[in-house]
Length: 327
Ligand code: CP
Ligand code: NVA
Image 1 (cartoon, rainbow, N blue to C red):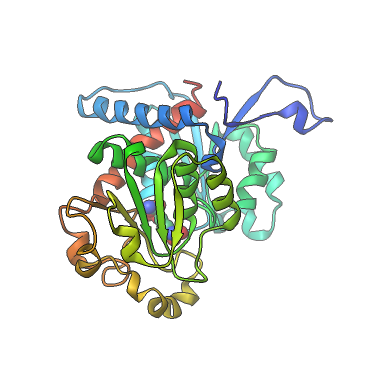
Image 2 (cartoon, rainbow, N blue to C red):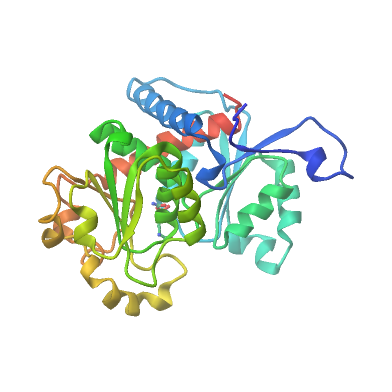
């Protein structure tokens, strides 16, 4: 059993529903995982990566189906989840939000209960975190958060895997975040609190990460989690520098304003002159070259964005087999 994962007994959630012994494990945010589970997902994803290289064929999710419900665009997350599921012998059904009855206001609680009759897990990309929460509350199959405005937990799991591959145990490293205090930043903060590594975030005033997430993580942290304004301060002595778009999906109308506010947060030659030469650069992609990162840095050997993208598939396999297959 996954101790820290949110576990709901259907019979407790729905006192009037037919009683079953069904245990449902969801991944709504990294807060659903304890330290051992986080580390286990990373270790298993690394193992699955080696097995793929060795040509090992898996079939342990044969006969299982995952439904992907995506209300925002995606390249990496969609394809890596689909590829992960096929790679374990399973099948996927992709639904864009606008093609479902959600677009015509069908209640989420109905969608959750209907989908759970057809699929073995739901992978959801949407705007509000409350959508994921409500689907999970009513679903008798696992609901996996594939990005909301508040969190991007699966991405941070595979990013931590990439960091460990490149730099060794993350507990010994200083991780920097430069730019918007967005969904990615929030999930990094939760990971830092739970796993126990140093995290320093540089965000412009007015673009801080979620204060409740920050406070909760700081409370359980064994290493400092710090918010500063200066990108130079954040990258000094950093082992890893994280960068993401300045305007996330759904913030397109703020793009122009953010371009000028975030200008001094660009990860380029000038900022990297203030960082250790061996610091690596992470970008979850898609990247806006010439905005949050320069072409030169993105294409340099120090940037590991494409290894991050690959690791999403290995991590998604680890998540799917554990939540669906009960590994
Ligand atoms: N990094 C990431 O989530 O990419 P997509 O938006 O392409 O899925
Ligand atoms: N913060 C970005 C991440 C994209 C993968 C967004 O939400 O658009």
